[in-house]
Amino acid sequence: MSSWIRPFRGLIVLLLLSISFLTGCTETQPVEEEPESQTEQPPDSEESASIEKEEEAPLEKKSKASEEKQPGDVDATVTNVVDGDTIDIQINGKEERVRLLLVDTPETVHPDKPVQPFGPEASDYAKEKLSGKDVRFEYDGPKRDHYDRLLGYVWINGENFNQQLLEKGFARYAYEYDPPYVHSASMKNAETRAIQEEKGIWSIDGYVTDEGFREGESSSVEETPASSTYAGGLPYDPQGPDRDCGDFSSQEEAQAFYEAAGGPAQDPHRLDGHDQDGLVCESL
Image 1 (cartoon, rainbow, N blue to C red):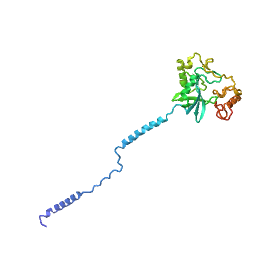
Image 2 (cartoon, rainbow, N blue to C red):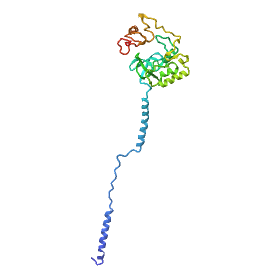
Image 3 (cartoon, rainbow, N blue to C red):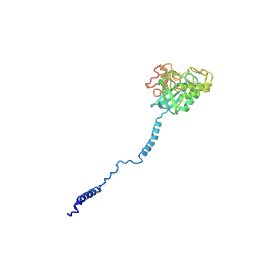
Image 4 (spheres, one colour):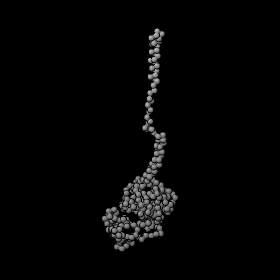
């Protein structure tokens, strides 16, 4: 080796090592790509959820509205109007006689009384409003009276028919046997308005009494007196106005009347009650 090279030998070796090191650091390494997300959410997911809630809301309102019911306890159909405060209804699969609660209308079919003023008007009003109509029936207190008639309120188109009789002046507030009654306050108010306006029965001075209606006042239509006798010595016509057990003085008399009217095959006066055993008015 030449003498002039020796002093630079170490420097040359160091330079070669540096070049080798730099070359190794600059080699390109493969870059791993990140996998695409498998659970990427659509950008309009929140908007879709909002639309679904809006679509459900009207259905919920409709459901609540369909659950709303008219006043009363049970559905019924009026099959017959006896007079202003007594009707027949089809209820729970059978026909029942109903005495309207807290009202008393003048007589039209009473066996011992003549037709009284505003009795026919009350009956005609009941027939106009109720005949053949679907109604709601509401119980209040004892369900039956001693004649086995149902006791309650009749609701037609959401209105209390018992109260309408008072509003029109066709009835007096009466027979409050087992207070308190649910609708007594509103019905008394209805009667008060009729009195103030002198409607119907209140247009005749002194006609309405605590016991009912003043004797001696009568309409032009007269009934056959109860003292008349019919075939078989019956006190009433079996084909005439409706009779209850209270119209008869004995069970035997009621039984004879029942059989003359067609019993036991037919019972137009409903004297046999619910047992249908052919024996009527057994409490007499």
